[in-house]
Length: 133
Image (cartoon, rainbow, N blue to C red; front, side, top):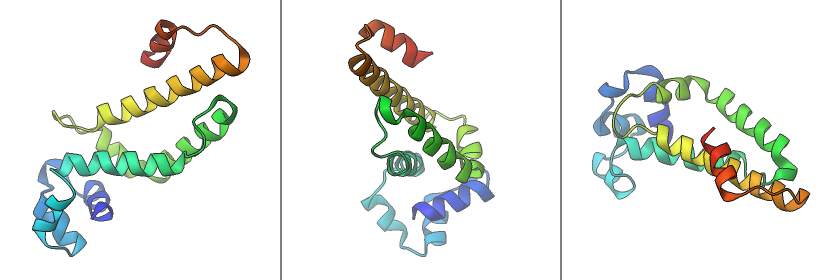
């Protein structure tokens, strides 16, 4: 189902993608969609969260920051056509916030780990500033 969504996002305008089209492409019953997702935006959130967490697992620390960055860049390069379309979605439930929050949290975790490992005073306010930057 998620691979069907990725294929459709790359090949069709997002506003023309329906649950029916997703399920037909996946060769599954339409009703099965709702056993897993609320709507097509929920599928995009799931794809990003699941795939990026798999791509960068074990790298959520200062020590592994270069590997994390490389893995994230590789993931986005491998899925470039898909994310170009996803980022261009300009609708209320667009996954932009999910992606931004994930990256912000990851950066926050790395800064906190850096602060502990290097004994640098990174306050919560400063960390929040860096995350928003």
